[in-house]
Amino acid sequence: MSQPTLKIVEKVLGSKDELAKELAQLIERAAAEAIKDRGLFTIGLSGGSLIKFVCNEVPSITTDWSSWRLLLCDERMVPLTSPDSTLAAYIDGLVSATPLTQQQFLAVDTDKTAAEAATLYEQKIRELCGDSSASLPVLDLLLLGVGPDGHTASLFPGHPLLGEKTAWVAAITDSPKPPPSRVTLTLPVINSARCCVLALSGAEKADMIKRLRRERDSPVCADHLPASMVRPYNGELVWLLDAAAAAV
Ligand SMILES: O=C1O[C@H](COP(=O)(O)O)[C@@H](O)[C@H](O)[C@H]1O
Image (cartoon, rainbow, N blue to C red):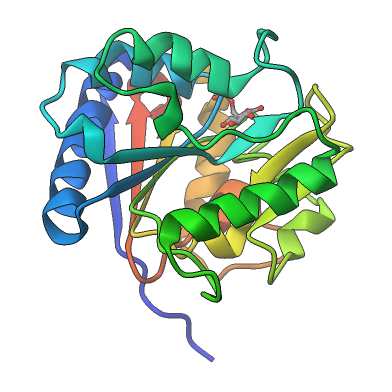
């Protein structure tokens, strides 16, 4: 059976700073559209290098901040005091620099087991979406990073979680990248979003990106890297690369 066509936009920016500015403009547009159409903007944030891109440029955009609801594409099971906490990094970078409040962020309960936290996080997203019986949520915008191994969120190459079909949020306790215990949005949730942005930067990722491009442009297969399984067929997939990452 042939796969539906995926709408892909790929942009190569000269530097990491330009990438951050492009990303901020995209977020500004997505927020304006979501708020106009639905009165709320739901945005999923990832950790790692993406945090700086978002925190450096997003505070200068024009938006109705009170209509934002921010969740995490994945979170490490560490307390907010840990330097590994993705939520803490965003609170630190965004709450003092914008009118956003900490209550607008959907926190993962990192004091629970990963399995309990995943169940609770799914409930929180169901409440946010206002439809407790929906089969999948339609989040406005997911910002995803890609690790040098091709992982995205906390979905790692060859991991059984890539086959998850029904849960919205899953626990992982054997992450190959530390810390080992995390929760993550699953592929069905990621691929139901209105827009997924992959932010790809750094020369160390260039070889992996060549492989990702090939995989992205061919039918999905079980041995593909997790980042090339990001295919929001009912929305749009945006790749933002800096020149070093895009080098062929
Ligand atoms: O561990 C993680 O890594 C990925 C990629 O991080 P990067 O620093 O290589 O960009 C990140 O997207 C994910 O959210 C995070 O938990």
